[in-house]
Image 1 (tube, rainbow, N blue to C red):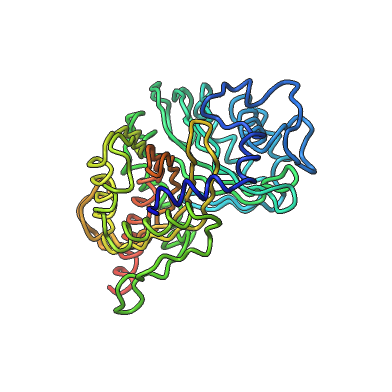
Image 2: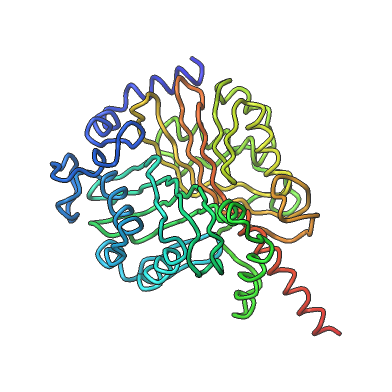
Length: 387
């Protein structure tokens, strides 16, 4: 039995997942009024959640829409714990008040911003709590002075994935990966100047690096681990995904991509890249590894949801840690600097008939640039002290 047969067999035996798919709407084929009905009946056990929510997809799509699109920012007080932690690509927020302030500042710059739910991959229940991975396609126009400076009047479209841990109506952990670089480029703003400003602000606070994770790759003189760590997986498809991610990113076996993806696979990447076919996916992956050739790729979380279009969707949150030692698709980093870089990313895969037919990959190149500049500032300070 090959891997496709094994995954199809495993999927057919997953009664809980099938029942879940029947109850909870997925985003792909539904309009917003269907996902967040005005007088919908609850279809999923959700102890402690506001009565308006019918299921966990409704919850995350509706409250995100109300906070960001309808500007009901005050819902953060009833939908986040007071001590929630929000992990971003250039820093961490540790309180609900910080989340409120950050949301206000981002909305100030983009009065016309709209965020459209693209998909939600989730797991959990009312007892264990829920985990959601929510891909949003945002559009807007830069019309007011704010965190990105004076308005340019230009439009933008970008992708963001937010992973949330939720218990009884409140988010208590969140990881947000926004493609800030895509927004900056479309607005005609200087990515180098933006990174310099963020790095300077961090440096003035005494920071010399932005730490967002850790890995166990290449300890001492050992080669990459032969086997993937499967401890975070809960089914065969997740174990399969973790195995090939380890082989491709850590063992550098990029040729496997040709067997993993359908010939007509679509790739939706950073900087709003829309590419087709296996060759383009290999090149994008090689380009990312090329910028950080010694990097370790460490998955942090994985979850799976049956897809109404057929097959299943898998969300993987990951950390990639290495040094800027080569050339690749992280073009804003320029010539290799040797500086340590940690990148947080989230990827969504759509498997159908045992092959990946779509991949959404989100990470923020500007975050890597901030880290390089911060390290260079630390070097200059150390040189001055020695002199």
